Image 1: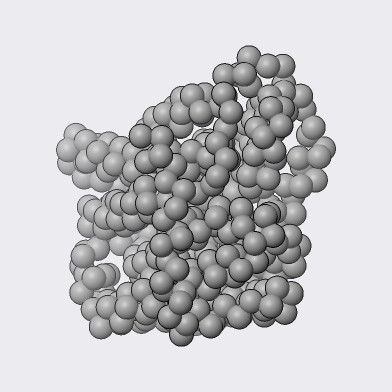
Image 2: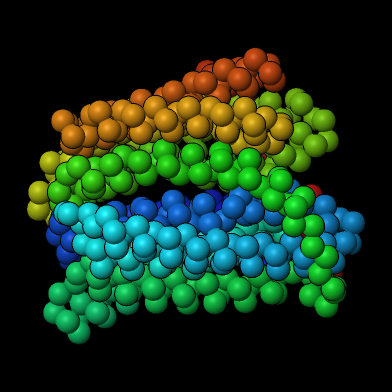
Length: 445
């Protein structure tokens, strides 16, 4: 059972099943509410996701850097200290950001968006940020599958179940009611995550006196926050800009198109989650042969699989979007453009992961910052005139920019020609490496 819960195959299964559940839940919500109400909901949740990442202060990524070292050295005081302080800082930052945005929304009231839904989404931020952190606590302790289990599987199931119950009681489902269902599902998921974290933390650490090295942890986390924050803004700037300049219904149509196009990057996400820890281990051991082979293997698996998905979406995208409800097929133009961006993203490979593993996080942060700026400028210029198509063009262009730029940095600094993985048959034969255990160390008890 332990091997199953830490194995890469289990991670892949949970990731794929979770993506299916999340996508299916969005189809149901759109059909139950219609495009305008669905647009209000997705706008509020997109804004909340950005604020949740900011509230995390980069600490979820820092856990992956410090926790394995504390476990290896049996430094239980440091382990308990970083877990406790990370929780405290995350909750405090989340409450502060939610309060600040509440004040802003009370002064600058958005005309076309539902202010109640926005406020409800705003106050989900502390819990969402803490949920992200709890996942990384389990992840950093080598319980990779457990770290994804509840947010990927339990959360969407609970949300759909509670939304269906509210729909049955009230006779309809609105964005406000769906937000209430979201509060219930996230709260219960967070309780389950916290219980798992308490179990996977070694017993010696749970009984130790915490040692706090807050300045050290924050110095390491804030640059990573910039990179992660920029990446999230890149993935949400289109929807947020669209909600400001166009009716909520168009935001709903675009969200359906963006989620559908995102299926093209699913394989990259899965193999990245599976291969990332293995590449990190190979890099730390100085095994460049295995490291380079794994990187090119991820490109091969993700690139060719994503091309197949892209062909399906280009040919049958309108029919797929029609599942969301009447009128959603109008988002096909945006879908076709976004598929191009996701295909480039998959073909470029795990460039952001490689940059983080090899200590090029600062360079990656600068690239993401410039790409985010370009995305925002393009969104502001194109969305008022072209609507969802303009948002798709801005997103696809910025996605191509940062992938090409990071790919060039990796090629120049590491000498890895990632594109070679698309044509080298040896990389496809090496795909079995991705299904080996995610790490050779296990947390001591």
